[in-house]
Length: 297
Length: 281
Image (cartoon, chains in turn green, brown):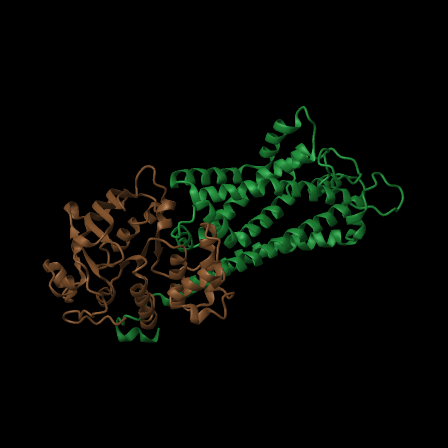
């Protein structure tokens, strides 16, 4: 502020000191907000790890639970891990082809009006609470037939579908139009262009979206409680029956009177958390790789 | 290419003398063509004939609808939402927008090379062979690939690395690869939308030479904003300009279409003269 006496130079701003102070305060607030977001995740991981670490061992993954066990015989949650594998696997097999086809139709073939309409429908579907999907599948598949792994997989597939198709649409939109024109300009039909030229460019991105969707629904509890939760402790691979799943197991064990059950629930939560963490990291890596590949053109 | 504009563009004599126009066989007959984006006309009222086994150049200032116009010839504009076309383009007498005409079949006969090289992310060999295989040319694939690459003046540079990615080539090489890819499927016409605009003079020269050498087999239509290029390669030249319509609308229209010699030395329209002498554009 030493230039005050020199008159109004265009480089002089009034209240410079106050502006700088406000700037610092606002920057600090923004930094704090970011720190809070990171801290929440940190606290969650730390508290889950602290409580679950004691039960995090191979038995958790390989041994079925022993209800009301009075001995120290090793037990785990193998039935829940198997069930989650089967249910999420089937859900992926259902959602992936439909989701990709929806995205291809919308991005490559549909006129703009239909594309906008269906994109909005997908966004709404993405926002439908999981419990509502659960009730819908309960009414559709469970009433009169009983719970089953199929019903659970179908409910999760409903949740995955908008995730897979929206992420596939995004990656399809990244493929430059010049590539479509190159193929169409040769007189190659559009379906062949899509199949042989466009899709190979997007495999990485589709995989990323799928991995993220898998990570998201692997932790879904609400619909599974309704359609796939009445189970015994035995390991079961057959989706005709209701299968135990990790999130449902965590929910049930949390209500158990036995503190060892609580520890196992924490350990299962830790496994789920680590699974989601690593799949998300893997998905990011895949996404960056395929973006770079497309951008390298 | 250098952008200096000489007072009158010198016409080089690479072109063989043209037979009289009534003896030429027309391949396209354009009548009353309007090309419209939404409500905005890009090109209006074009009438012209494109002749077989000649190089036809389309020149004009930026925004006169040259690219839009050339993309009408193989219905590439179909891909653009809101695009509409009125009037007719007849290819060997058949309306290419007729109800029973498949745009895929049109593009099969009328190939295109784009402004920016757009090779497939495949190997050099596969870039040329993929289109052939998809379109049912299955015999002597390797010989045909070699022939196309030779015609596109690229063979000597890539013959030892046909398996390498096409994306590893330089821009000029990529563009020649795109030309090889286009002629490998043996179209009847090759449309070129400013094929040399992103290329250095040497690559440009290679492309001009290949057009000159191949026009006995193909018919070329080339859009260029480079008048020297039109003067060097084209037998016929069409000059497009921007016109003002009612309500402040600007659209492109065909001002003059004649033998290249005539367009550059004795144009009949003053707008053509202004453009080719560098007074405008």
